[in-house]
Image 1 (cartoon, rainbow, N blue to C red):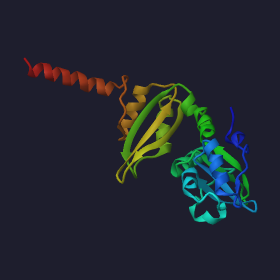
Image 2: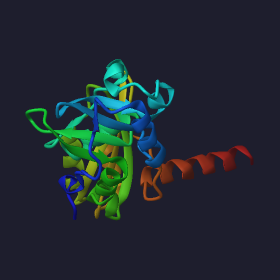
Image 3: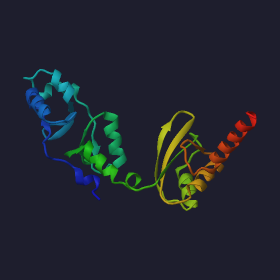
Image 4: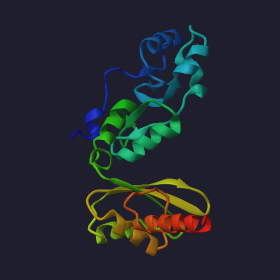
Amino acid sequence: MNTLLDYINQDFKPFDSKETISQVQDFFADMNFSHFPVVEDGVFIGNIAAEDAETLDFDRNLSHYKYNFEGFFTRKNSVLLDVLDDFAKNETNIIPILDELNNYIGYYKLEDVVKVFNETPFLKEIGAIIIVEKGINDYSFSQIAQIVEGNRGRFLGAFVSNADREKVQITIKLGEGGINDIIQTFRRYEYEIISEHQEDEHLKTLKERSDYLDKYLNI
């Protein structure tokens, strides 16, 4: 399995601040990048957006438009989820990579980072998805993992998929294990089950009682 560092890209050099907007426009016309990094004397100074480049004076240098640059970047030691977060927050398909001394190293492309994410056990392995909900101050990832593993389930991962000021929803991926036992244990720990599951005996019982009541009322 490839790691994130395997996808550091150096196919194209960053723009130099002395390059003209015309050169930048030509580059974006040929390449499907939303942004591209700019350096000055070899030092990263920001990213120029393709949409911005279209509106600028083509015979001026990039250095005239530093106020247009966007300053996002990631570090060489950033973990996968942090890099994905950088892509999402900045609405970009390219992220420049800097080392600890802010030296420019290269860039990540969104399609490559998604490829790495798709190879993680969370997405690649077959398993069940459970979505639970609890008070924002009451949930615990260690407790969630303990509930899954305490019922002989294999915990593949979890993330906060929705949240407001009062409650949080957590999406859980698990491998083998009795999903009904896991669901009932979550309920005993006062987690609400948001997702629907055919194996959920609690919901089956409620449905049977509801069907019986409807039948009784229609007699």
